[in-house]
Length: 65
Image 1 (cartoon, rainbow, N blue to C red):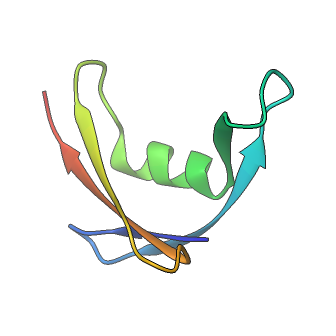
Image 2: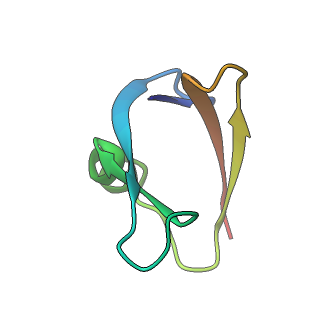
């Protein structure tokens, strides 16, 4: 899945990982960590996700605190 930062238009290759606790729980892997570091996310800020259909691209918008 490609995560697209709506503000910078940068693209990050991510993976959806099924958790061991439950099959309906998912985590983001791959370049998700790079996205978080580059955008310097703050506690209390918000992320708005928009998943395209079919789910190959996921747009994310950072809303600062």
